[in-house]
Length: 393
Image 1 (cartoon, rainbow, N blue to C red):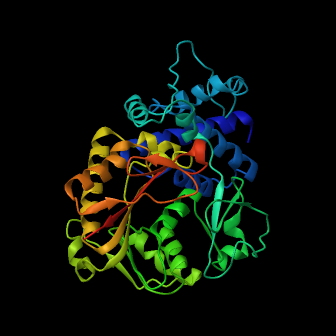
Image 2 (cartoon, rainbow, N blue to C red):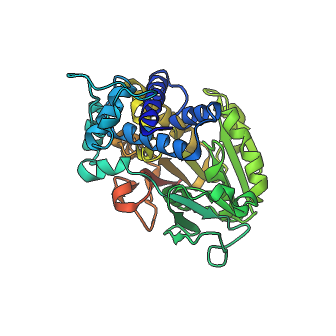
């Protein structure tokens, strides 16, 4: 493909990404993967160049662009090499017309940028949310140890107990160590959120929003095969992926529970007041994960944020009922918005004086209300809010 044809292909794919964001459809990585699968004529260099153009254009636009062409013109405003490629050549983009709309730059849609600033995330720290993320892995302590495991590429040790960092694009999922369950891909911040649980052998631990089980596997490693680990979620598809992952990692998960939204207590009745620790990795806006999913900031609106905060309150109350007296609840969101993080915990504590905050002692992060905040610029991780509260009664 010519450079101009790559630009035009990126424009077509950006149109699909924008439409999917509006319709809450497939994420950008899925859209690109499907296009590459259906268009085998694009070689590996073409695929890399097109992917790079698409994601650079997404990052260059704050609000949702009018279309893919306006997004690419915004990127061309930052990269003068691109503008001459709008030359009208075969398979290339048409020449730029005078007054043609160019997508607006910025961190996010204005309302969301304002919410971040009100939460103390602005300037360089806000801009860092759109940087490209490195690739972090966790050594599975059930099978190996960071100090002795030899990998095809040497990684940088992370502050997390078994974490290593590699450059973006390192093909760790193609390594035999991945196939054998010795390593898992997991951001350092996510690893630290699991460490905050303090799961130990012999405890009863519930991962209430387990999803596909990334954090569940980390908890299983911390419990070293002892105790009772429960993984619960409302998403059947994601939860079904935990079984094969746990088998590969030799992780002991006592039970997986599929929850019926609004009737979660039916499935959780046997565990009321029995858990030593409950992890609530709550559904959230994902503002802390834009480095990996930059188009997700186009999928959020104020009504959706209100629905998420209501769901978080519901999960908070549900989880509290599972914790035994003297036990702990760990609340985590990959968001940097105060209304999803410290304000949720503060509201719960105000209504439940029998609970108290016990902020986790982590090697990264800074105090944020009753918890700890991790952010890409100061900490090099995805953005997280992590809080631990204890049931004193």
